[in-house]
Image (cartoon, rainbow, N blue to C red):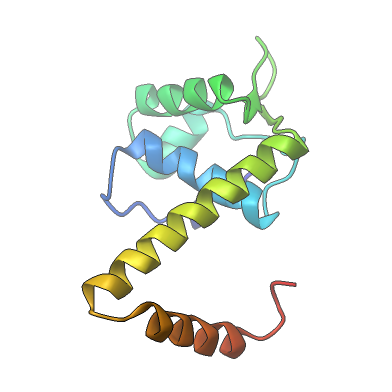
Amino acid sequence: MVDFEKIKMDGSGPIYMQLIAFVKQGLASGEVKFGDEMPSRRVLSALLGINPNTVQKAYAFMEAEELISSHAGAKSCISASDEKIAQIKAELTEEGARMAIGTLKAAGYSKEEAIAVLEKYWDAEGDEAK
């Protein structure tokens, strides 16, 4: 089951989009896998203290994006293909890179200085991501 107890609602955008982003992050990290069950809409709305219609909206978007599949009388499950997960990883990587570059440029770093900062922290993280 996808563990929404780990979600941090931060007010950075619409709640339904935060739910979708949480699932996408989970897929990209491998924490959420094909076939994992989603909590029912009622259970998730009660768990997070949000309107059931908000959860329904998130589920509808995730169905349209082929992240989950739902069938009448059955639980919704993660149904993202390997290709879809690769696409999500690419999108999240690009988004993160653009944000980091924007922050570094705003701080006045040159391209060479920015690369040095990234290399410093890349090396500090070790080989865990490989």
